Image (tube, rainbow, N blue to C red):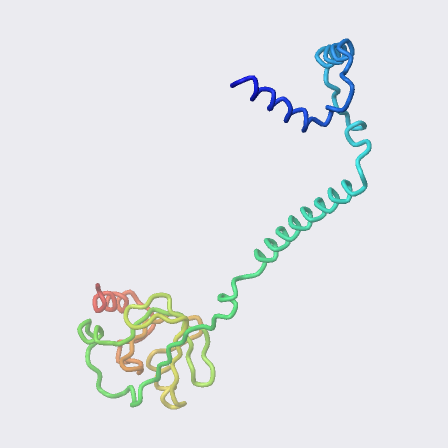
Length: 211
């Protein structure tokens, strides 16, 4: 770079220097300030000196931030507790599923065939269940195992009073009793195909509905 360019650069620097109009600093004073800066430790800020002189706005912003953080934390805790105390909406609103059957249309004193696995296996519904209640001509059972057909929460068996008497006499339904029930096209099978739970009848069901 030529001397001409050097002179031009120096002139530009002097033009933008904010201290160009000031008198030159005393070299001895500059040296003393530099020595003090290099030899003295930086001042450690204490709690008193660190907070001294801060404006009220600083404290207001800090307090607002603390309130917001506390509110968010409290909302999260309350929401978690509320959610844990309440069951899912679907579980609260779910209604039990029901299979509706009818009793035999004819008398149970008619001639019956000997129960067999081949005939029993043709049933459209077969299950092992417990009587929940018997009211107004309706027997309500809760299935514990379904051999064939749709699985529902409860099964009801409905019949006219005389037919129900025949059905009760044939199957001997009792509260809290355990039964093996089969049906075809919505009608309960009797003649030994449905009845109180026994090991022999359970073996017949296992054979009829073996997978």
